[in-house]
Structure formats: C-alpha cells, structure tokens
Length: 428
Ligand code: DI6
Ligand code: FE
Image 1 (cartoon, rainbow, N blue to C red):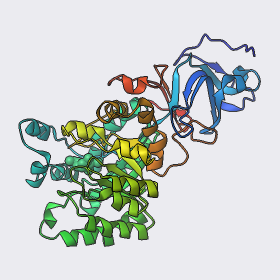
Image 2 (tube, rainbow, N blue to C red):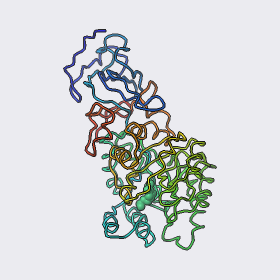
Image 3 (cartoon, protein in one colour):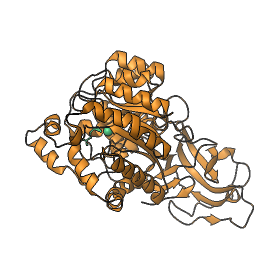
Image 4 (cartoon, rainbow, N blue to C red):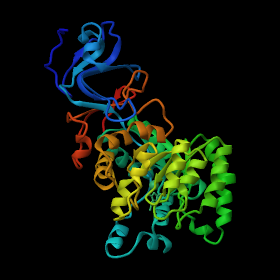
C-alpha cells in the first residue's frame, strides 16, 4: 500500500493540520514502534504502527497497513514518529510524594551507622515528616510537593497514586489528600489518592494505641469516605508501625465503607501481611521482601497485585529481595513503583525504578515495563489504562528511543519526548 504522506516532520516538529476537514480522529501518530502491553506477557510489539485517538480515547492502535484511506486525512493532527517507541503512559501506583521538608539528615545518619528502625523508635523517621507536614500551610505543601510530581511526569508518568499518612491528625490528613488532588488538576494527569491512616502512631497517642486505631476506624475513615477524598486505604503493617490485628480492624471498617485496601506488607519482617491483604481482596500488597510462599499463594488466589519497591530496598541497603520466582510461578501480577517518600525512597523517576527492579530483583525489562503500566493499573483498580488498545484512555508516551528494553536499560536521565494524558499533550 502506498501513501502520500510526508516524512518531513519529526518528533516534536510540525505536523499537518486538518482541523478544517472532517478528519475522524483528533490526533494520529504514524510510524511508531508500539509497545501495546496487550496479551499475557511481553511487550505486545507492533513495528510500523499507528495510534489515533478522539475525545481522549484511543480509537486505533495497530499496524499502519491496517489504516483505511490516506493517513494524512484521518486526524486533525497527523505526525510521523520516525520509528520512536510509543507506550502507554507510565503509572506510578505507590507514592508518598506529598510531605513537608526532607530527611537527608537521616540518610546521613544511616550511612554513619544508625539504622532505620532505631531512628524511628527514637522519634525520628515518619514522625519527623509528620511535624514538617503539619507545620506547612496547604499552599506550602502544594509548592513543595508539585516539583516531585513534575519530575515523575517529565519522564513519562501520566497516572500516579499519592498516599496521606504524614498528618496523623484528621485536618492534616485531609490537607494532604486535597493537595494530592490539586497536583493532578494542575498537571493534567490522573492522581489517585489513598488514605494511609495507620502509618505511624502519632506522639500524642504514644500511651493510647487502641484509642488511636479506634479513632481512625470509627471517626476519620467515614469523614474521608464522605468527602470522596480517597480512592483506597493503606496501612503500614510492621514492627515499628501497626500489628496485623490493628490492620484487620481498619480493613473491616474500610470494607464497610466500600473502600478497597492496599498494604505495606512484609518489608522489614514477615508478619503475614501479604496473606492479610489477600484475605480482604486487596488491590495490592506492597514491598514483600520477607513474604513467604504461602503469602504469594494467597495473593495469587485473591488476584492481589505484588507491588515491588526497589527504591526503598536500594536506599536502605537491603539485601533480602522479594520472592520474584515464586510470584512468577504462581502467576501473581507484578507492578513496580517508586514509593517516593522522604525517608526510605527519595526516588523521583519511575523509569529508574524499573531499571533497579531489573538489576536488583532480576525482573526482565518486559516485566518491568508491564509493572509500570498494565499491572500498575490493576494495582489501582483502573481498567481503562495501562495498555494501548481501542477504548482505553489516550495516555500515551513517545520516547526518544526505539527499543522497549531501553526504558530500563538507560540508567537515569529523561527519555520521554512527547507525553499525552487523556489525549492532551502535557508538559513537565
Ligand atoms: N513506605 C512507608 O510508608 C514507610 N516505608 C515505606 O516504604 C515509611 C516511609 C518513611 O520513612 O517516611
Ligand atoms: Fe510506602
């Protein structure tokens, strides 16, 4: 088949403008190397591909040879990508990027011999971020957090999850969730919010654990739900945080309100967190360094996604990697996220997280890309994104590389050339 379209345009360059004609799509990208991520494994690669969308929804994703008619006339904007790799927008399904201050001092302390749990027990750690987050006004918190979201966006993230959990009083928790939503609106990307009420015991409840857990379950959760400020709930189940029994109470309260659950599970010790999350049909269990095979099997049965967080493993100089072979064997979907937080994972690039997942956890580059797209969408309960297919949201990234393995291969830097969210071009 012969076409009369010109190859004179280049990525980022001019394109033809058919706005006055009755083009069928808003935007059509030609000569793409499409990594569709459709199918059960691999990249779902289509060479010499094209992708077109209208009103924010993909209406064509396939080989150029399957386009009907002269491609130049099919959309209001038609551009050649000259073979560039095109993927779904990346999805960072676990972040804590709204917080006040930083904890670079603790990074220094750890490298001078202190350990993460000891710093936390001495009142530093999460509680030091709680003080800074409470002290910041809503506008200050927004101003401090926005550049972190922009950093993720600038290398291809078009959907991200943000947790509360550095407030630990109701007003500050709500402030964090509002700031998270505001970031999504400002950047034109999707922000999903998660209420992390059980993150650490606030200092004012040091002698009253049960009172704190009751208050979160019986008073705060209903307010968060009524205000529509959270898409899911999460807890930190760990020796330095909350017990499985406390988490169970909290999950029961969430379930009554119709909120899905996620869990920080088995990061530093095996408290059976993976099994607990699975028993509540959890969207995901995250970390999982210490999870045993029974936990992996429980996740497989429940369809709970394993979210691996190599940034915290790296920054804490951990040595026990999550049980990736067992996850593969039991067909547990694996997602990758940054865990962007001030204490254990100040990681501002999901693509760097994919690289770390390959080198530290031995994922293949295809598993890493699936982990930052299709499986990450599932970890957020989103069925409308994560693959390039007709009917999906037009969250689309064109990269300055041609081979999908390059996304995890290049360590750091920014490779995204063009970023579209819901069909509109978004810039960092
Ligand atoms: N996510 C968390 O919530 C904790 N660890 C993790 O990976 C604590 C984060 C922090 O120290 O602020
Ligand atoms: Fe986390």
